[in-house]
Length: 160
Image (cartoon, rainbow, N blue to C red; front, side, top):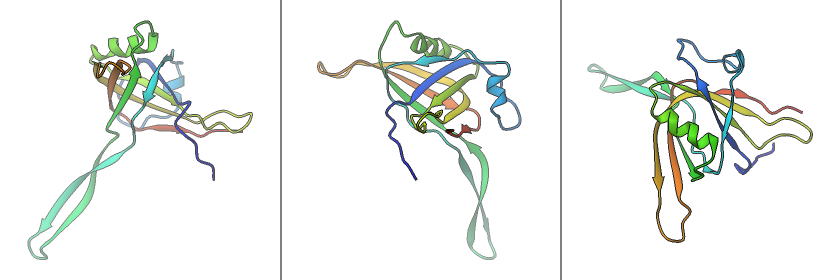
């Protein structure tokens, strides 16, 4: 088993992609092809993945609360960037925050085997917020982008 650092991870924003009632698959992001724009100067990319909502029921007769799995949510992803006012990816994310639409997102991990291709993650989401963070005199000014993930995460494995 080999593990990798997050260093080298790349985040991309695509175009508007509509919700559907079933899980997304890779072809939803490739047919027709998306135009991907890298969001650059990413310092942190947060986390993404499904969590089931707890649905509880307590039977009076046995005094035991039972937990069932309810709807799934991939949650929010918090992306932190160094502000680059000329970066097309940051500008696209800022513009997407003004939209009510879901956008396609792609992560490219830094886990390619020698001579191979890295793994990728695809999902749709809304840019829920974009805010600038200024902090101290010795700090880099940051752009914080919050994504509300509205689909399953499509995983594409790294290949030799």
